Length: 541
Ligand code: C2O
Image (cartoon, rainbow, N blue to C red; front, side, top):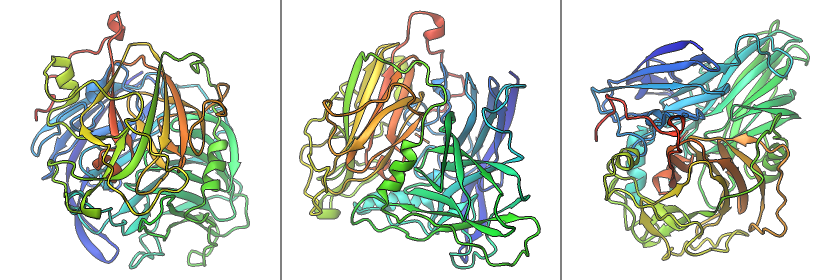
């Protein structure tokens, strides 16, 4: 492969949206940010210079970072943030990977405005496993806040209460006509009648999962999380934050202007959210530009069945090496609770909801960000910043999957900590994730860094090994799995990429509340199994 250089300047810029002007943090004066284009096997070098007033890191979401954990990007996990005025150069190779990825800030809630697409083409001469599209387009779903997103996180934590909803959903940064002052702030995809288009869908949203549909048009899913799937045709798809998908759509309808819509999927109870939709236009050549658009039909915000239907349709095109045997079997509950008190940095209230604070946990451990990067502490053997005792099963199992009580009792069993789980190199790992919660149950988009994993099973209710059906034949190979509300999902992967890997809910608010843990994969025997030394310009805390 060749080497591709990019220069990312992170700075503030003024945008006008929803009748308001505001300063946002962005990259190279673009919102959404610049697209990184590459080919499978290429080396990517991105120099990130922080000219903004905030700490910044960039994560290359979905890129497995084989033996390049230092460049993964999550703040305080693999690196200290790039401080204002500093720079850091990310360098990694797209080993065996192609498809649709994205990059985003991985510190505070800066991802709200700092994100962009990564498009990796197959090697020269290697065709797609589907009919070559007439054109390809990037369609990024996002959320827009009128408030500064860094302040918003601080405010949410200081309140101890849930996060307010965003002010708009966006498509490629545009809210579209359902929002004030946005009739012309709309993305248009101009299409030629009869042609087939490949849409690279990315959900870069902060705290919401989203349905996506185009009026009167079918979508054929051909890739999920940058891995090919068997073609599956559907009226709509659902993407949680952190998920990407490629769909084919043919302009096979009468010449017209059709809405592309993004609306909420909200499976939790009692949460205030924005029940509106971002609109873009799928506009045929020859249509009168100002004509009325045909509305897209989105499912209801709580349509769990619509989500299951999409999930059932995701099957790997080629699922080689699904682990049939297991060396390490973890059972991980994920839940939203109210704790007595959580974290002092960032400062979190102890007098919020129910005279406690909103908290989230995996196996009753509410993750506290350390003040140095775990990777650096691990690599250099510096003690005192994390422990290696993340439990392989919950401290206490809350059997609330069939409808959580809404009286939000304090979760007296959860503890705060920076606990990691250490895995042997090459071990075959299974993780059963179980949604629980004393406040509410909810579909959580759980993301693992450094790996893709086979989603070998999922279902509603409590996981039961006697009745759970596993698919070891053609499970999808993903990096973010929406664990069904009040249900479970089982993932499998081989731990063959040494490093320190974050696993967390891709809702930023849940991550801030501690819905995270860290997997440490030890080195193997040979030099091709050993994490290299840290780069010289690695930021310091
Ligand atoms: Cu896209 Cu840890 O995140």
